[in-house]
Image (cartoon, rainbow, N blue to C red; front, side, top):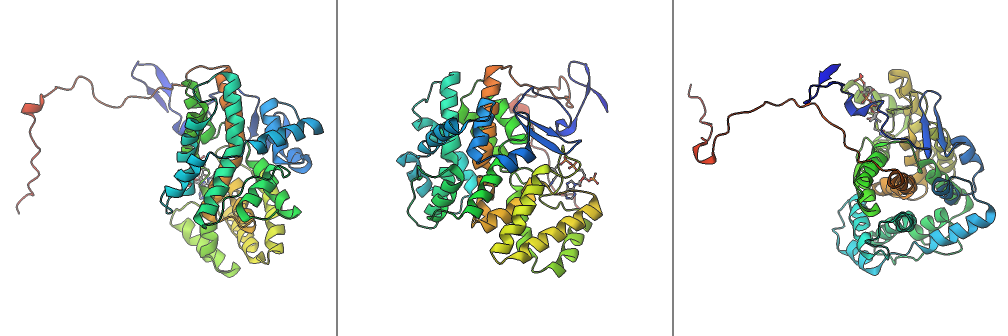
Amino acid sequence: MKKFNSNNHEVNILRGLDGVVAAETDISFVDGVHADLYYKGYNIHDIADHTTSYVEVVYLLLNGELPTRKQLKEFRVKVVAEMRIPTQVIKMMEIIPPSSHPMDVLRTTVSALSQFDSDSGDNSQKASRRKGIRLIAQIPALVASLYRIRRKENILSPDPHLNMAKNILYMFHGNVPEETHSRAMDLLLLLHADHGLNASTFSARVTASTQADIHAAVSSALGTLKGPLHGGANERVMKMLMEINNVEEVDEYINSMLAQGQRIMGFGHRVYKNEDPRAKHLRKVSEELCGLSGNRKLYQISHKIENIVLKKKGIYPNVDFYSATVQHALGIPKEFYTAIFASSRISGWVAHILDQYSNNRLIRPTSKYTGEYNKKFVPIARRKTPDTTPVQR
Ligand code: COA
């Protein structure tokens, strides 16, 4: 649709910035046509099948190359050492009302962490990188600590011998996870690590483009991730699954939602028009974990939903759909699903924020003005209250 903006320039308004190229980056590429995803040139299927851990992916996103064994070990030790949370911030979490959503607590505490960071006030590229690595380590620690505060259990310190995925599960549940679970957590984290110019990453880059500090940019991203059309979808997927008692009920439940024009959470994508490549890996793990935990029904319900939505709407599941059942099998309560998403996407946000700082130009789009011009200004003393007396019949 051709429109004119306030400068009388002819413009195309692209609702939701659909198809707009707003940045140049080599961090990741979402190939919607071929349903592929690349991190620094590596196909997500190779990353999912061959990387040893999520931290290996974090190293790749921040350094552009896969690490050697020695580099990975050093980096893992460094990241795990940064998982410590200042006591003042733990105290904040303890006094925030227990009814608050974990994403709200996360946004608040990440903002607070900026005041306690040893590099606070230094926004040089080197200091921002140090702060970014700290946030990559601290966000999952905040999430696990909040979970234990809510359950009135002792907060656990990270174990320096465990990798990030194992530490997250250990800091949640208090025991070192078995291999199937830690591998599932690794996969979950590495599949969520980055995804082109998604809404939260864009939001982080917009804030970074004003030369605001990295904590400010990550706080913006956290606010954006929370919404149900973005990271908040995984929690709603589980809510829906919990409302369906058995496989026989799926048809009626989904058909009635579609008939009412409601969206099925965990389906559809702005860029992928075929299957989200990340869903393939999570579907497999979901089936495995649901089977192992004696909850195969949950997987069967999910799979039936997938078939119906594809048949009726031609829409495929996205990353959030099977992430719900995987997290459920890992013992994470649904209110924490989006916070676990954030615990991984923080690595992509940091990579993009540093990228933005290194080649910055203020991100400032324009809009088409639809209001009036030169309206008669009435001074306050002469303004009249509109007559709201009901019409007498
Ligand atoms: N369930 C049912 N219908 C859906 C749908 C869903 N999950 N996602 C998209 N659609 C339909 C819309 O109703 C619309 O139909 P219409 O043209 O008949 O009105 C059409 O598909 C296009 O949707 P649109 O909102 O324009 O697509 P978008 O690119 O703006 O939205 C999402 C992308 C992700 C926001 C959208 O697919 C969605 O809301 N999904 C559910 C939330 C979710 O899982 N988010 C996580 C994304 S990773």
